[in-house]
Length: 150
Image 1 (cartoon, rainbow, N blue to C red):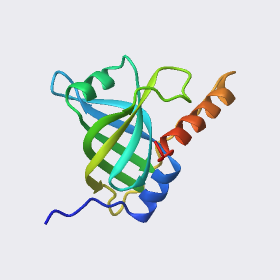
Image 2: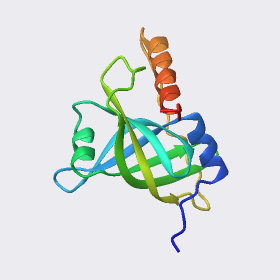
Image 3: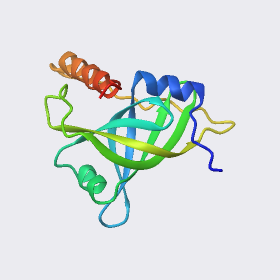
């Protein structure tokens, strides 16, 4: 019998709130391709994330479908989530730029934290005159990713 993947309580809480993540796809050349995104999950079977229209990441997902999300959070959360991805919505309405909502059907969750090392969370800071607007857009996109009704 196959064991279903599971999230630690801390990883589940981080993904329930929504978090920045590194999305890794398989490029046309067979090599890994990494891109920043946002991710959210309400259970360990699926994780949603955003993908920009016209990007190499979108082309990779449409061609191959394999994806991994590298999650780096506070309290030494370091996890790799793998699975098959599919588009859920062609457009995230909250984003002022064309972005699709994708979802991974999780096949593996790997806790990558280890003993004497503590990781710092994946973080970035909006800067410049549009920083407040960009923070509001980010929160709206995360809210849409967490809308499990659709």
